[in-house]
Image 1 (cartoon, rainbow, N blue to C red):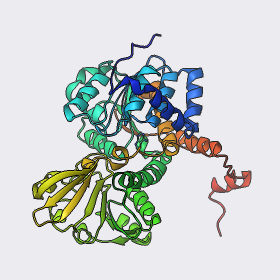
Image 2 (image 1 turned 90 degrees about the horizontal axis):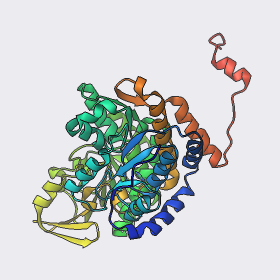
Image 3 (image 1 turned 180 degrees about the vertical axis):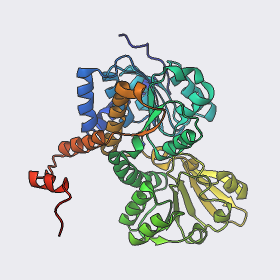
Length: 423
Ligand code: ADE
């Protein structure tokens, strides 16, 4: 089977060599994806599949795309955020690795959607999403593609929430595997990946000293837990704002201060939203911020900070460093919005480190393989990554790290399987 000719809309193909070096550097830390790549190259489980993927176009995603291509898939890639594309990686994918890419860092919103539409032009059999924008576009504008669709995957919490609400409305018309819900994804990517890369993004954008700062983390899901633990590790005093009582309790017992954002607003130096919800930092909080407060978002969409309210409250807005917007409010306070409220870890740094994306993308690759084999028999709706595949990713990662673990003895297996033994 011949693959379709490479098509693209990327910033500059002359960046390809630099991009290839980045892709190779990331590969050093992605041994599980490498193993899957090697197996795919032998068994070609994706032969004949057309995959349209809307993911952050990074060196880690490039390694995933290469594994899928080795498996026989025809793949087209577009960005899942206007600010997350690594232009040199996009160029390398097109010019060196022969993969169609439609993504330019800083693209405006119409171009973002034009690129999505271009990724769909090949009439995919499988979609891969990070935020559910492809699925939404297919259900809104390209319902003609539904008949040929085997299934899809979803990378992130926000996307899974969106898909579940589509399914609850009876609107989701093909099966999607929620990669985010694999233990080997969210325990590691959301917690350690978002934790480290969020601080990395804020540091690169501002060069701020964390030690001694009061850092307010809005949301204590897996990402919030990771951000809070890393901020504390840097010597910051951490404050958590939550709406879920159990998570709030967990934050208290993890040793963080917990209070409503209305109170935290006036004591925080740095605010980080990781809620997946709209206007977590709203007008009433902006009214209480200290002079000099930094506002950053690490949730998927740029809606968590009420940016229109912030700009409306400002007498003057100016860019004081790349990705740092100073809003001087009418009463003279200055508030700094980072990366236009977009994912700070990808907009100002490089996203999660490769070693953690190795597990997320191993799950993506095996989920796609599972869809190619079983998708036509799966019901429409949101499905988990099969348990044994999730565990296999954990086993492979441990092996790659050179870490051995214990096995149950026969006696223990028997004990766990019986109900007879008691006190
Ligand atoms: N999401 C978060 N970090 C990422 C990365 N490095 N590559 C692709 N997607 C990501």
